[in-house]
Structure formats: C-alpha cells, structure tokens
Image (cartoon, rainbow, N blue to C red; front, side, top):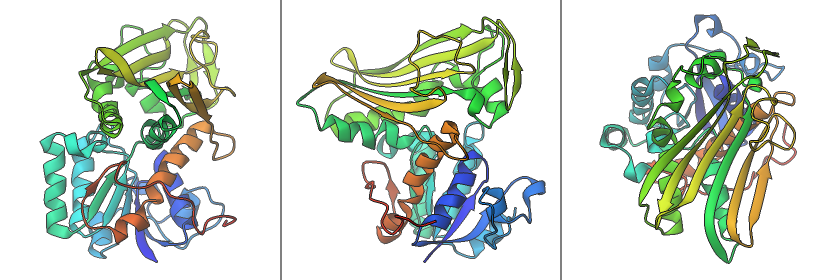
Amino acid sequence: MISTVVWGTGNVGRAAIRAVDAHPALDLTAVLVHSPEKVGRDAGDLAGLGHGLGVAATDDAAAVLAAAPQAVVYAASGDIRPDEALADTGAAIRAGAVVVTPSLYPLYDQRNAPPEFRDPILAAIAEGGGSLFVSGVDPGWGNDVLPLLVSGLGSVVDAVRCQEIFDYSTYDQEKSVRYLVGMGQPMDYEPLMLAPSIPTMVWGGQIRLMARALGVELDEIRETLARRALDTTVSTRTMGEFEAGTQGAVRFEVQGFVAGEPRIVIEHVTRIHPSCAPDWPAPPNGDGAHRVIIEGRPRIEVTVEATDEGENRSAGGNATAVGRLVGAIDWLVDAEPGLYDALDVPLRPAVGRLGRK
C-alpha cells in the first residue's frame, strides 16, 4: 500500500479523500488542513463519506512530511497563492513524495513552463527524489487526453475545441465565484480570472500541450472575452442573491493559432443562472458539462456529464479531475523521479475498483 496524504479539504480535497480511500493501492495516512475548526476532525467526516476513516486532520505539515509519505495529493488552492503552493509542493517533493496537484497552472505543460516555476521543482526532485504531475481541475483530462484521443478517430481534423459549460450557482466556493470570476459584481468590475493574460496563464499550457501532441507549431495564443448582465435579480441556493444589472454570465476563449487560424481552443461558458445569456452554449441538463468538438471529417462531438455529492455536476467535474490525479499515483511511484505532464502519464482503467465501495 502506498502511504498517501491529502493536503487541503475544499472542493478538490473532499473528492481526493474519497478517491484515495477507494483506491486499492493507496493508504490514506494523513490529511492536512488550514482551518483550525477542521483540526482533529476525521477525514471521512470532512469528505462527506458518512463514516470515519480513523485519520484525524492536522495542520502540522512539517510533521506529516517528516513521516516520509510516498504520495501527496496537493488540493490546496493555487489561484491566489501560487508562491505558497509552489513552496508546499516543493517541500513534499524534497521529502521524497510523488505529488499530484491541479494547483500549479504554469506546469500543465511542464516543458515550456516559466523557469521560476520549473527550476524550483527540478531542484526539489534532485534533492529529494520525488515527482510531480500537474493536471487541471477544469478538468485537465477534458483539455488534453480526451480531445487528443478523440482527434485520432477523425481522418481530417480542422480544429479542436474544448468547452466547460457550467451554472456557477452549484459551485461551493462563493468568494471565487463573486470576486475571482466576478459574478454579481458591477459590469465595470475587472475580475482577476478575466484580466488580460490571466486565462492564457491558466489554460495556455494545455493549448501548448495539445499542439505538441498534434505535431503542430503555434503562431500565438489569443484571448476573447464576453460578459452579460443579469436582466433580473436571481436567488441561488448556496450564495444568496445576485442583483439585476450585475455580471451574470461569462464566455471566454483561449485560442491557439496554427497557420493563421484558431485551431486549438479552450472555451469556458459560465452562468450564475440559466436565464442569463440563453443564446450561448448550454449543458444538456442545466447544471454543467464538459464537451469536446473535433471539427473536420467526420465532425465529432463528445459531451461528458459527471455528478457527485448528490446531483452536483460541479462536484462531479472536480471528482473526475481528482480521479485522473489519484489514479496516476501508483504509476508515478513505479516511475523514475521527475516532472511529468499529461502526455507522459497514461490514463488507465480503474483496475481493482469495479464494484468497490
């Protein structure tokens, strides 16, 4: 059994605890939390499993890493704390652990990552012998392995488009929804996630990674952005009211240009209520979906819907992203120490998990 730590118990961390517990090759040995209110609580309780796992949450990262775990699922946010996330993952790698995380956006395409992110990780690997694999929570497989796999079914490929289409009222992270994305804010408010160059910083690595896999050279990466205001005040179950006239929907694209045309595109369409921007792409069943469209001959469209924590599709997206990361741990433990990306790490069947509760 591979001793495994889950670091963080938010939207991603809850799913990670469940995934580690369900994996026959992994043994959950510690859970790290930031909030004092979570210290001492059982991991099963924090993950919503309905039963205990016998692992009490702690905030003592140094003690956990001193125990030399073989793997760490780093689920703490890197959105507004990239330096801290980089330092935390580096510490785990220096302790000899395999680390999987969605939190270090610049390392999605690790070969072309900025030196300020790549060099500290390579130094930590050289020092401690650990490894790192970064894949997105949006989810990563929807912007790399799935579109690449599906592209191989066509005889002619003109363009690859990856879409995330979601109703953000189902997302259990109010500060991010209101301030990072800007839902419910005045239309002249500039959310950090939508500021020029930020979408490319977050998703540009996946564009470059797909281009590398498809054997094409990118001319450049561009961004598009559209925002819509709410026509009426709406009320949400988890976050209260969003007033008429404030931002209610966002649509942006990160476009990889090849030979002068946008050939590789990652598009996000997000709403706080389905009544906003009804002419934009919508998911089949209201809450959310991930879609891959291969324009060419034949034209191929694949839509993936996942639910978790009841019928929550936002949680389902998180859970599948986590499944990709946690499912890679045993492969990474057997591999040489190093810095890996989605083209290096295979997506494998759920061996030993069929029928497992």
